[in-house]
Image 1 (cartoon, rainbow, N blue to C red):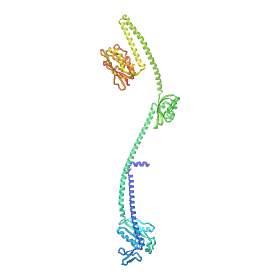
Image 2 (tube, one colour):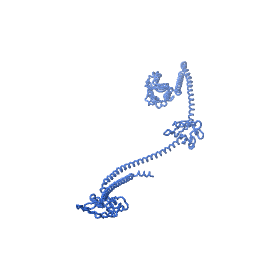
Image 3 (tube, one colour):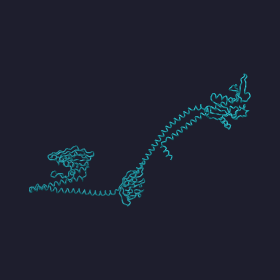
Image 4 (cartoon, one colour):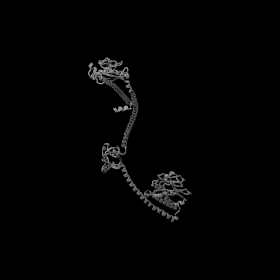
Length: 624
């Protein structure tokens, strides 16, 4: 309650007023105290002054009394004392000088007269029952004498305001001394009786004037101090208020930020739970002891247990046999290995099995101490079944391929023999029985032999194509410049017959199968020599292209007949021909072999061409 009130006061516009008010009050109190201290000191000084005067007069009176009075010449100012009834009051000297006795009272009055005339100091000898009317007390003196008669033992000092101004008044009691008895015994006094008093009255202005300057300086000092301290206090209070307001604003912003972050965190937690619960994979969270803290709906569906049924249970309660040891081992590794992946078979509520893949993560604090763990679980039962089926299918396919390879080998070997027989007997007929055949018979026989030769070439090409798949590649560094020299040597006769030219630029060394690279460029350069325009010298260029940093580019360009690019996909298919068999020989499988070789080396192959403008084949192979 007090704290809220103070905070409300700190935030108010009048925050500086009360401290400044108390400062002014304190300054006034200090100034008042200093003022009264100065006045008190002045009063004490004046009192000491009055006491000194009275003590001096009292000592003079005592001396006078001890000597029985003193004689002075009779004059207008010192006439005989009519109130002194003693013998020898008046004397005449031998030379005729008249003398009169001056007793202590007479002397006191004379001193008072002289003092008043010279210093403004009024001395008054007074008594409650005065013999001389001059000694009659005034009202203040009468009141003091009454107090003395009541037992007041001390002198009286005060500051009074009189018509003539402010004056100090002091009165000291007079007691009968032994020396006084010579004159006053007849009046019935005894030693120690109160005889009256001596009062001193003197102007206060000289004494008060002495402290006026001090008071002014004191007030000026207090005023300066008030202004300086007040100004500093005002600045400090303003700064304090600004800092407090800034702090409150910062706290408000922090609280707003905390509230926003709390709201965001709440939303994120809701989103987190939504994501976890809607995830297709199972989610399993454990505490530091390995007991279940949280599971999502996917895991509940996977195992057939409800959230409540799984809470607090250990993971190996949901497995059987050797899987219990797998779980125990993985739980024991949580502090040493932050991320783990393992396969395990879970037992569902209806005692069926679920093959699962666990991706587990440990939760560690700042000191790398284990606080818990969680895992995402994937049901791989179907995947294992598919993998087993795929493995069985792959085995079956491998057996089928082996059988096909064996069949192709046997078939090609068995087909080659009757083809050789047909060709052989055809040649014999043409050599020995040609005269017995008419023109049509010879034509039929030549056609038969041509078909047999094409059949033999087709079988040979099929065997070559199948070997690209079945035969294991021997990968090693291959210098393509050397390969092209070998290709040029193999095609030297054809190049000479066509008056052709094969220009080879600087080619790179690649990692590949040398025999396949030889066949690739043999087919490409051979095709370029084959598909040429009549009466035109053949030119084939083989060079390296720009590539793209990851692939090498090799171009084989010719000046042949070209083709329409709409048939680009067709030319790389087996047995696809763009021209009649009587125009250009071949089985239509050469470019299919080239493409297969490039693919075996993880590359790509394409071509660019226009009819009558020649063709450029592009071979892209991995760099390095």
